[in-house]
Image (cartoon, rainbow, N blue to C red; front, side, top):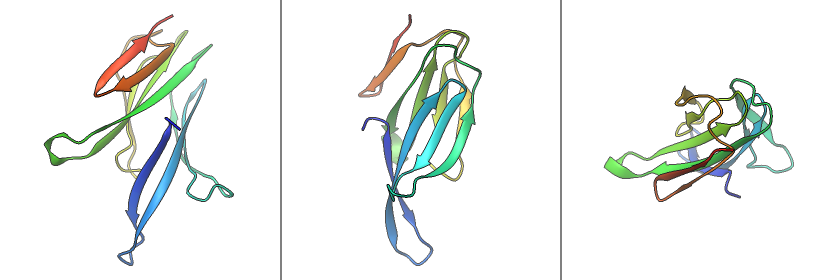
Length: 120
């Protein structure tokens, strides 16, 4: 459940719909999947990253400071992969920034705005 993101969207008829997304890592990057209808999951995007030979992990943090709600996915990879920060605030405009050197991250977690990164 830590890798489930909820988002409220307007269906263009002034109806607000609560949507849910799953963030799924693989050796080559991050899948973002709309799971609002669990019987019909649909991939929103795939964020390509360099190949992690052994492991990749993701955690989510929402920053509510400065009256601007921003949600980020932090993605770490081991054995040849780099650390990435993915802005998922707008599921129609996802951006990824490489933020670290290779081999940074076996597992990670975000708690109260602090990133906890375990290297192996």
